[in-house]
Image (cartoon, rainbow, N blue to C red; front, side, top):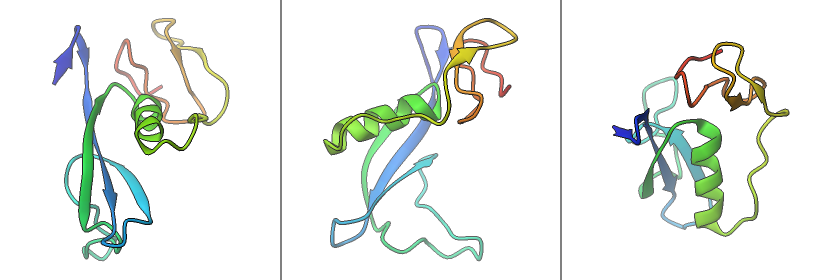
Length: 101
């Protein structure tokens, strides 16, 4: 999916039947453990978010949960390829040049 010329990734939020635990993952499929079984407490999909980076999706997720501001890992720095701000200690995804730096 592309919005405004930017390639967007899909992220999905999940919760258990009790509604307590909340999980955000890249993709739209229900999360699976390494052994292939579904991760417990991910029976209900809450929503899908289309965003350029993990940090952007997490900020939207936190906003929808009403749980305050999302704090990305590390400080924002200019991408060495295109100069756009990104989080090299976080996802390392550049929203502008779409490279994992």
